[in-house]
Structures are given as C-alpha cells and as structure tokens.
Image (cartoon, rainbow, N blue to C red; front, side, top):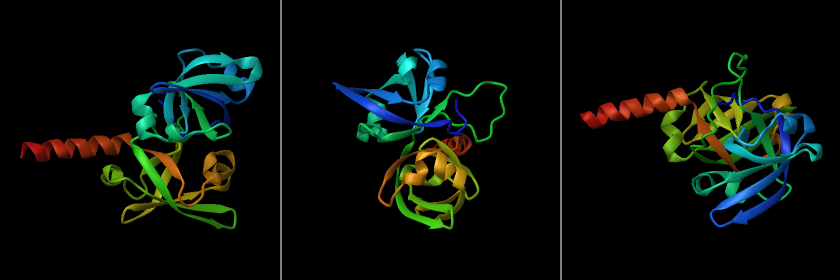
Length: 203
C-alpha cells in the first residue's frame, strides 16, 4: 500500500527488454536506495513494482515490469532519461497524508489541458470509459502515483488543481497537452461500483 505522497523524482538510466518484460534501472538518492531491499515494493509513476537489485553507493535500483503491467500502464513507453515519481511502501501506524493507493493502475488518461494561473497548475485529463463511473467531485484519485482531489467533472474529463509544491516536486509539473498518464481510482469508489454492478446482475 502507498499514500500517493511522492518522496522523490527518479531518473531512468537503463532499460533492458527481455521477451515479455522490461528490466528498468532507476537513479535516485542514496538515502532512498539504502532503505530498499530485493523484494521491496515501490511505487514508480503510480505502478507498484518489486525491487530486484540495488547499488546503493551509486544511488541505483532495478525493477521489472511484465506483460499485464506493460499493457495497461505507461511503463511500456518509458525511455532512458524519463523522470518518474517514487514512493516507498507505507508503514503501518504512520500518518497518511494522501489516501490509500494500491499501485494498481486502472487505466491511462490523456492530458487535455494544462493551465498555469500564476504559480498554480490546473490540469484536465480525459479518463478511459472504464473509470468514469468510479470518480466523483471532491473524491480522491492518483495520477502518476500522486494523491489528488478532483475539483470538477465535465463529461469524460476531470479537472484538478495542483499546488505549487506538488507541481515542483513531482512529474506533474512537466506535463503537456496530449501526454498519457497512469490513473488509479479510489479503492472505495471501485468497491461501491462493483457491488452495485453485482446487485444489478442479480436482477
């Protein structure tokens, strides 16, 4: 589990394509890498991945993304020098300043508008049809692994206000119109929608 509060932005240094998986080497701070062990979970751009190796003196760690993850997330498009949001797994008993995020990407959204008002960022994204019933105004959503609140919903688009700190310290501040980003809807919303669907199916 994660909270959607990005700790650092890392940089992809090496990508190795091996049949149906990609082995990805990411550079970040030594302080973060030394806390990781092979088998540790880490959120990379909102995707829960497993650390398979680390070189803490160089500030490097490696993860692997396989078939299903590559098909439904931006991991299939990552390149060397791509910057990615990083968050280590949440500790039980710690304060959660975001919301409960699983790191299970539900779909890909397209950025439809990026508007800076002074130093404030307004971001509009078009959601895939699968997720449109799982969002509500003032509800939680994770975009690229960042816990955010939906300001408004207009048709298939959601609009989000991003504070200057978040824009500066995550990859969201680099987004441009047409970019594709990972989306995870709120887990409570998913349970509600699936429960209602089961009742409807029972007739």
